[in-house]
Structures are given as structure tokens and as C-alpha cells.
Amino acid sequence: MKYEIDLRNDHWIGAGSLLIIGLRALDAGIFAELDAFAWVQGWETDRGRLFRHAYRDPRFGTLLECGLCHGEDTAGGRKPCSLCDGTGRIDRLRPEVREER
Image 1 (cartoon, rainbow, N blue to C red):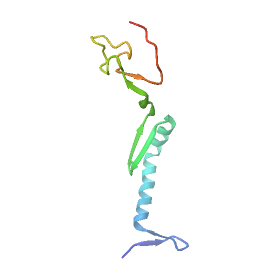
Image 2: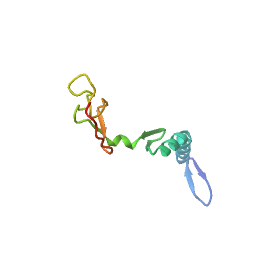
Image 3: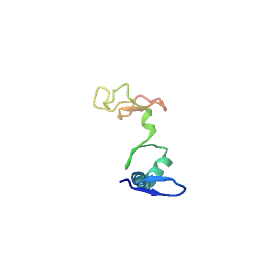
Image 4: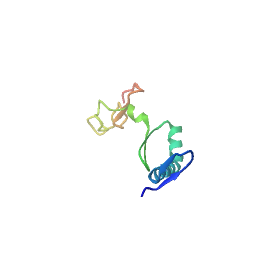
């Protein structure tokens, strides 16, 4: 026995379809504020599954490992690397000329 609902004009929707529509509406309602915040910030949003959203700032794609310290934060000694200021990474879109310390 199949449960179906007659909406109008002889269009039939099964109970499973109504459940999916309801779950998608609930998902959109739960994540509406977070999705709006991510959109304003310019983040990428991945909505792979119901009730699971992943957010990513695309600026993370511009970071590279420091070539001088190889991500170790120090260049040979105990003082911070002069190229990356001890962060271990550099921004490939903003090449900055560093002064020798």
C-alpha cells in the first residue's frame, strides 16, 4: 500500500518526497543565519548532505609554506624567521619586502 497525497491537477507526491521536502526546509531554516554570515564574509559554502554545511575562507588558498624556514617558524636558530615573521607561511598574493633584522 503506497501513501500518496493528491495536491492539485492530478499531481501526485509520495510521502517520502514530502519528508525530503520537509527535511530540506528544516535544514535551510537551521543554517540560514550561518549561511548568510558566510555569504557576507565571502566564504565558500559546501552543502554536501542534509544538516551538514562546511564553510571555508578562500584566502586560505593563498597561503604558502615559507621557503626559508620550511614552516618551522625559525630559521636555523631560536629567533623567528625574518621572511615570515615566525608564522611559517607567506601570502602569495601579497609579496612583501622584509628588512633584515
